[in-house]
Length: 214
Image (cartoon, rainbow, N blue to C red; front, side):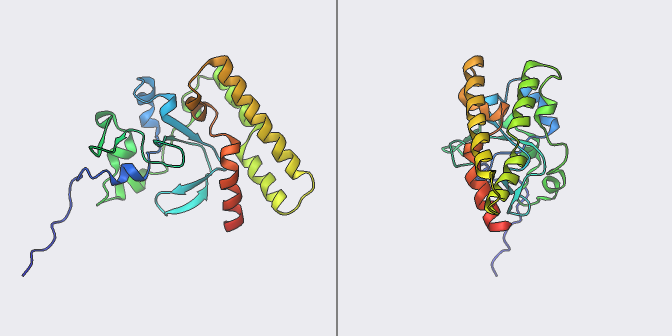
């Protein structure tokens, strides 16, 4: 009689979870940013209203609140930027975020329980009253993803004037990001951390989501 397949109890270091997605950060990961283990160009802010894949349900959703993720290696991929494809190992393993520490693919309950708790946002990271906090607040007031979603809904329902408002918002966002980058001289990849992804980048995913699910 064939032996029963041995039950998995430890990580096999296959890299599957790392290739699928980078982790969402929790407040317990704040020290990784303060200690400069995670840098702005390694992360991306997904704002309330953006379409994203819910890793628990496996279904796309519109985010109810802001999250910060470790970015993917390249555009169009969420394969974790810290995953070494040749060795299948994590380059910051000893300092990996909370979600990575909790994830056990053979026993996902711990990660599921903590998945949406104590999520890290820019509010936790930007000093109140600082120039950066004021800039991000101004940008959010003018380029809200939730407002963009509503304008797209209006446009899909043929509401007069909504398309022009969408175009105006996209133009403002693009000009704001360009000016911010030129004045601060930051790495362009860090814009996705300070200001979230550009509206130009996310508008088509939003349209596709709304056309399919609304």
